[in-house]
Length: 537
Image (cartoon, rainbow, N blue to C red; front, side):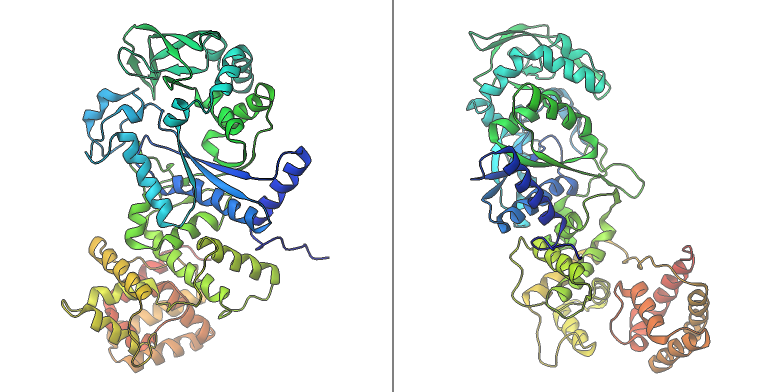
């Protein structure tokens, strides 16, 4: 018997169904099911940070689709201290290490603090992607007393919290020290303080500013001894051993995804949530991190960040959401050169969504159509757009004569059959052409698509290269491709698809005979030669 399709058939629909089933078993109120994502404010937000929001929002949408009222909380960790000056930012920020990010001046001079500047960059990206959320500032949450009850419970049970941390990760610090950071009233730092005692009647924490090792570097404290009122936002819980749990309980969070890098912290907080706060923690889903092409984790502190703002220069918000939503598990390498691939893949999904391409398996069809709908926040366009392969647009942008770019590209797209005789560019196509112009301004050339080739295909390509070295006539080039395939026992249609994929990133396009000379035979020869150096499939 075939498995029942849930909702739109995606991972997010299945997760929503599991959450609903779990909440019913726990007997909790179903009036509002909240999902959460953490919003960092200590460095330049990268595309991975947006992934937290995209995935949780897709679960929120899936919950709504299954009849539940749901909202996404974007909780900003803006009480956190600055641990390291991110690469590319002024070295003058060094003097603010250990300070809460909202107490540091904005180095760009446009917002009230460093923390506000960084968090707004990510919020702007969420807005651009159509992600709906309820924003909460950590600083304001502490100042308004949103977590007061949880802070008191954790401080009264600090010994148990310390034992859980020790049992889970072997760290003994919080057996002796309270899981709370006071902001030093003398020097203004947060990470240099050690909380020594809780006075429950006065709601005060006693602390000493003695210094702390941050990212392998010792930050000296000022030696001041003071007290902090926990109800006035003069300090915060230690995130890895209690704050996460406190948020879940205070805000009644039912789902939160997390990255592999904070797995230990989530496990600790799950136990604290259950054993100390008496609240069943939210359902989780663990995802892997994005790596750069050298295999390093994408991080603002080491400066290999691909920001959403960079993505939006070359690709649409929906293509970025596709990157986030198409797969939940597994590590992926990523850099700016992947953007054309996701733009083309989104076109492919749109064709499936509108029935222009067929998928025989009903389950797979539902899932792919569902994925496309989630890339649009379940508000997909009413009709398909005109699809021109990204590589082709960048080629035209590169060739376009100055002053008559739009006219030139329109003429070419008509001659290639992408536009009808009197059809003009629509807004979507104009936007894509803008991405293509940004690309050719910033990059020398678009890379050919990596593709695996059989021995016969490699031999056919070698032969074709020799023809291209001497042949200039479009019709003869077209015939040579056909004849080379036949000679090597290949199906011409399949060989043409391989060449299209190598040269323009999709399996079909304008007639290759005229296109190759227009593209520049030398460019095509070099692209084919680079492809031959790749390992065989």
